[in-house]
Amino acid sequence: MYPTVQGTRIRWEFLSYVYSILFLVNLVHFFAYWTVDIYMYLLMNLSFVLFLLVNTSRPSAIALYFILGSLYQLLASVFFLLGLPRLLVVHTVSVGSLLNTIVGAYYIFVPMLQVEEIKHPKLLKLNLLLLNLSLLPFLYGWYTGYFKYVATFGLFLIASLFVLAFNLYDSLHQRKSPLKGLDLSVEYLILSLFLLFTFLSFGILSASSKDFTFAAIHHDGLLYGFLLLLSAGAVYHIMPFLLWWKKYAPLMGRQRVPTLKDIFPEREGRVFLLSYSFLFYLSVMAGYLIPSFEAPTECIH
Image 1: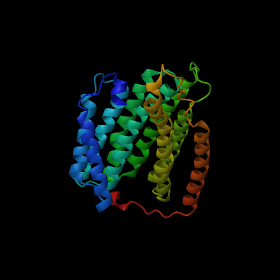
Image 2: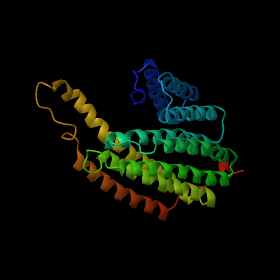
Image 3: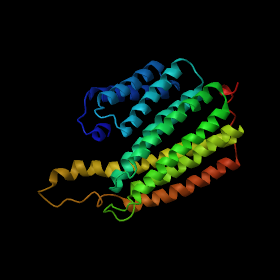
Image 4: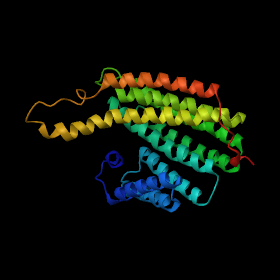
């Protein structure tokens, strides 16, 4: 996706294979020993940073989201190597790396899938600044165990997501798209963004009140709600496209081929979206009513 955004051919493609091999070997190592090999993890992240930098021809604001996301992933592996607090490492990955990458992906996928343009390009840059200027004191709070920093600058992280939501809403509200209604994958992405707001808020509430019963809702909600629906929304677009490209694209001009919409399982996709969302919220409520999460004492001084 990244070279496509840059409008260039892939360079140093071998690095993507190096990364994939290291990732898979590390995954096997994790399942065998319940820990990652830190040097392999560091090399894996270094290869990914190099791949992105080599394939960066125009460092646009969207490209910077992905570059910063990869740098935070590399930083997390350095923190891990130095033996710094586990929750600092976890939040460097989840907030520093994943949040940068995901916000960048929203700015790519939502306009692309809905056939719209970003209405406020300058807000995209403001979004980038607000997110990353908030990250350093936020992570410092995890390093020191000073939860007031975590809660305060977590609010700025949520503010950066409000900028994203407003920019996407105003862009979709232009209604210049030839599509009728929202694309199914966009519906998934919008709901997952709502879940991101919700469960980040639980994390901030947990940090500000030091009531860690909310922490279980925070991480389970992000993992099984936000990330799962985000991934499912992407898959509902990518898999039919790959099928169409492999099976039907070579037949164009020789016989009638179905469009991407013809092979797109929209009805089943919406059934899954609604049913999973309902069951997920039931499980969240059950988890809240039966709390079983202990306070993360390793960061509290």
